[in-house]
Image (cartoon, rainbow, N blue to C red; front, side):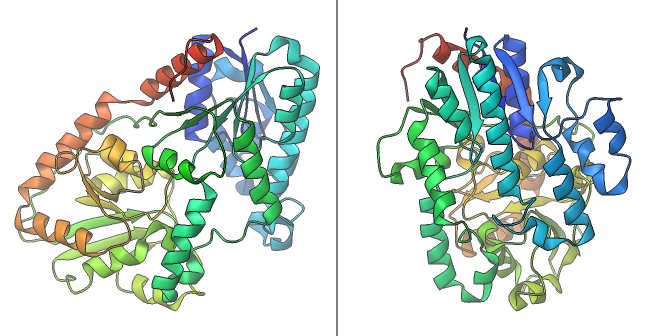
Amino acid sequence: MNKLLVAHPTGNANTRGAIEGFHKRGILHSFHTCVACFEGDWQYRLAAISPLREFRRRLFDKSLQSITHTYPFKELMRMVASKTGMDNWIKHEDGRFCVDRIYQDLDKKVARFVDRYHKELGAVYLYEDCATDIVKSAKRYGLKFIYDLPIGYWRVMRRLLEEERKNNPDWAMTLGGFNDSDVKLARKDEELKNADRIYVASTFTKETLKDYPGQLAPIKVIPYGFPPINKSRPYIPLDGRKLKILFVGGLSQRKGISYLFDAVRGMEDKIELTVVGQGNIDGCKALKDALSHVNYIPSMPHDEILKLMAKNDVFVFPSLFEGFGLVVTEAMSQGTPVITTDRTCGPDIINNGVDGWIVEAGKSEPIRETLVSLLENPSELLSVGKAAMETAAKRPWSCYEEELANSVNKYLNGELSES
């Protein structure tokens, strides 16, 4: 039986693409997650309550309802705690309803499902931090373990961010990436060690796995897809106005945000920067000071972010460590050209200088040089923006779904041997 069990606690965009592709290919046995809404069901109706509106973001196609299994209690409590100030309940790794506990709870419950239904399965398809107990059960019955790693290897992240912490001490407290316990990091290594095949969404992620201290299974890169394009996106000439730049993401130095602020410093008469995202603003003086000189928006609904992308001339995503960077594909789908770094999905989806720009991570000068060039050659905003939209149109999410499903199906049938 070559059918897959897929488990992911939140069912994000890439997981959604994976399960829909597997389902269309006829190889999906079941999907396991904490919360999944289907129009009209009790979880969908529960989302009418203000603290639980996030449930609506977990809306799935009706065709998946009969094979979807949910385990909502702890995730429900996490959402309530996060909205009502019960921070001890969601404290990293320790809180009763923290993200780590939710992942581990799902891991244990789905492992019991595998014990019961293993004869109907050929493999389990799992994600980072939710692949310990399930894998033990799967291996016990000879099932294959396919691992989807959405972000780069933790040892490389720590090395790169430690360098950044030393080079940029004023921004160090925003970095994160150093809070995971040794136990959690050991679990990550164990997951990689046990994988029979690994899928990643960017070449950068694959490259980071070269630092794994041991032999790994074959690794396949399949980039994610783009949202539907915005065919009605207007392009307003730059004559007599400022160049409008947008950043969307967590306000962390992992996103390289200080390099964006440095790049535009002194150009305020020519550039208007808008920043959307949340972070520990009060705890970082450098961040608080920088935000006081730009248009700052703490948060927006996703559909409003897409509209905002279409109203800006350039999207800048200077991340220092990114598994992919869905905001890059979102901006390109809106016809907004992107400046991003070589540590994102950029090298996999952008033709440098044609439908976007790729710059070296950890430097402000390349970003500034690109912006100056655009101010001097504003016609590029139109040509590169339209090229970005054309690139997006050629790779909708259905392409990712089909490529992943076909690759996994061939692997299950013993037809794949490449890395």
